Structures are given as C-alpha cells and as structure tokens.
Image 1 (cartoon, rainbow, N blue to C red):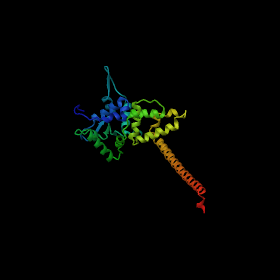
Image 2 (image 1 turned 180 degrees about the vertical axis):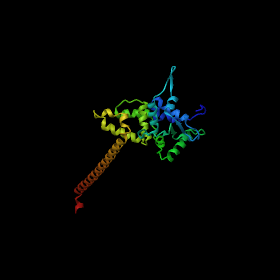
Image 3 (image 1 turned 45 degrees about the vertical axis):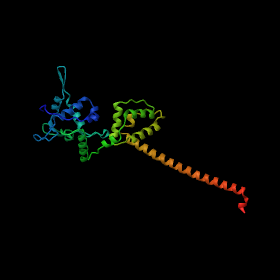
Image 4 (image 1 turned 90 degrees about the vertical axis):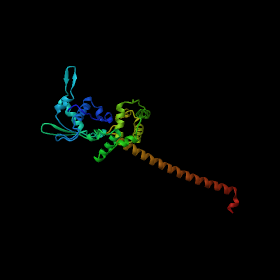
Amino acid sequence: MSGQGFIIIHRKLIESDIWSKPPLYSKVWLWLLMNAQHSEYKGLKRGQLSTKIDDIRDGVSWRVGARIERPTYNQIYKILQYLRKSDESNNFDPMIAMTKATQSILITVLNYGVYQASNTDESKLESKEKKSRKNSGVKDTNNNVNNNEIHYGEFIKWFNAQTGKNFRNTDTNKKIVRARLNEGFTKQDLVLVVKYKSMEWKDNPEMNKYLRFNTIFAPSHFNDYLNEASDYQKQHQQQSDTSKATDMNDLDRQQEENLRRAEEKYRKEHPELNE
C-alpha cells in the first residue's frame, strides 16, 4: 500500500453489527478496505487483496509506550470468519469472501464498488446499494425502515407504561428494536406483541420478569410472539363479531316482543277493532 489516495466510509457503519463489536473488529475491517485494490492490478480485481493473517496482525498492531502489541493469530482468524458469515437474526450480510491460495488468502470485499464510488454522493450511494441488493436477490428492507420510522425515546416510554417497567433509552434497547424493523417487521407488529405479552405476563409473578426488550424482541422469539398475538387478535375479533351478532338478534327479538305487546294493548283499548 502506497499510503496515498482515500477510501469512503459510509455513515451506516455506526448502525451496523460490527460497530457493537470490540474495536479490533472495525480496525481489521478498515485495514481490509484500505488494502483492497481500487482497480484491477496483477490479477486482482477491484475490491480484492491477497494477504496473510500475519500481515493483518502487523497492519492492525498498536503501540503501548515503546512496546508494540499485536493481536493473536486466533483473534484475526475469528474476525475474518465473522466478516465472511451472515447473521440472519441481525439482518447482517457477509462483508467479505475468502479463498485460500498456496501461500496467502484471497479476500474480496463485497459491494466494494457500491461504497467506493468516488464520483458520487450519499443519495447516489443509497440508490446504487438498493440496485446491487436487488440484482443479487437480497431483500431490500431499507424502505421498511423508512416507512416505519420510530422515535425510540417515546417508544421506550410507551413500553414502560404498558409493562409497568422502567427501561432506559439505551443503545442496547434501541438496537434490538431497530434489528426487528430491519427484518421487515412494522411498528404495528411491535405494538401488537408488546400489548399481547403485557396482557399475558404482567399479572403473572413468574413471567413478569420477562417483560423486557431482550426477551420480547429477541430474534429467536419475536416472530412466534407475533403469530400468537395475531391469532389472539383474530380469535378475539371473531368472538366480538359473534357477540355483536347475538346482541343484534336479542335486540330484534326484544323489539318484536315490544311491538306484539303494544299491539295487544292497543286492541284491548279498542275492542271495536276485533269485530
């Protein structure tokens, strides 16, 4: 690497899963971006680099006084495995692809061309990203997020009012809510599940403790909870419709009875009508 030129860092990095990892994860990711080819060169395509784990260890080392600290081989290997694997629970797509060569590793930074377009602005980057995801068959959930914008402070305050809890407006709570929105769930889905689980657990001493963000909105639970809430809502609506129909029938019968009695009374008061 010559140390010249630049790379583009998208603002969405701070909303990504890697931002919540230890700092070494982001440092390795940035090192890969800065060492990837910006154009084809010696058999490497744009966004690719040929490297070794020891090279990465040296590249992300840091100083503590006069001493140089290097991450371990296993630390770097673990981070590379994280970057190359997707995590459906957090809507996290792979960031790199890796191929083992004879004495090195060929790393391809995925979507490099989308984010490293030097002649574009943020709005164009968003458009290119959506097009890239569409062409690759990856579902674009950005519109779901935009159409379900949520004020986290107000939502958490509402959550506390529903559940009787006192959760704070923390990054951890916001992140788990945002992850469900990123998966395509809506604000209405969140509200429905919170109301249902509050009704089911709030007065249950054993289950009340589970009225919390990391349980209700957990990726392994939320869809099941939503199905439960939806089934309950449908059943309750059917019962309500049946009850309304019964009430209407009762009302009709009562009206008929009142008319019959009124007619009998009128005939008694006017016997000449019976002749």
